[in-house]
Length: 166
Length: 303
Image (cartoon, each protein chain N blue to C red):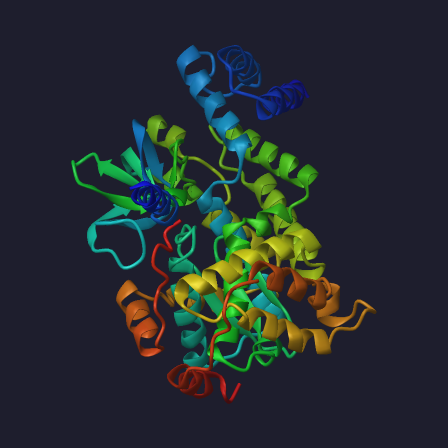
């Protein structure tokens, strides 16, 4: 009888430490800090995409599991995103000066946020004529989809370690 | 002159903000300075406060979109200097491995995603620029004899991005100055779109990362931490974690203590091997997988 008790305790400990646990969090708004992200049906690689999220989308955090957060969009959809793709502060997205000055209203001008953006990049390039963006523009176009990754892993006999969501 | 002094005061106020919480009193004080500096709209408390809040936020840290532009220019500087291998099969292959590993990491996304390219040089080097722009030299890939070993090299660079080491190559003094410039220019831009100072600050940031990170390399501690994150990442994907020690063995055979070549940018490989082996104490070694070996040879055999 006693051994069952110990076994039960070990199972509880195993579940607690091997399976990433879900922690409820106080509902707090956070903002997407990457250009684009998938709202996933479950935490981790290979989950189904429920919606496409964009930078500065406001999301309400419901819970966390390992390195993923469960969120609800302003449209009411619930899913998971990587915790590192969210931040508490809304981004002051830098805007190209050309776009900022094209506005006639003072409000639009005031909304323009200067920073390290494509305008500054162009000036940097002009000052450094030996530097060119050809290779970088090319590498930015090489995007591997989740399906391509899954096929690549399968063909290579690679199996994702269970519980790799930390 | 008064305007210049006012901006200096503003910089001081914003420097105070940088060291602690953005309290209402400090925002109010910074607002008064902005008003004195002649920032349009600052005379209206609401607008002034908004401007200062934006300035204070700019002082906190670089945003992901700014890291993206910093990373682009660093990658452009390095690829323009070394040249790149124009072999689409090889580049797509390292992107398949690298982007898959990145997707399994604790930081699966950056502003525009992770991107990998092969540098056209026989020097042994790899570098992860902020934002996920990762460059691997042909020389480093030639130290790899299997896909698992290529994955080990790429996992190490993904780990550098996850740990934000590229941005830490910016000296603390430079970071403070650059963030200050960003904040002041943000406020000044209410009246003007002059981005001259920003361009200067941008150039200084790029130079810091290239000199401190790419040319001189990271500290022994950074490399040790990065190796352990990389080993964990390899295990998540099902690769042999000992692949990293095998690449380091090859590098160790070529290591010269005179600090030339990759020895200039990387700590002694034997120390790193010991560190990794310690972390893998009870982990069984993997074996060569025929399909992986075949596609590795197809993609990188003629590099």
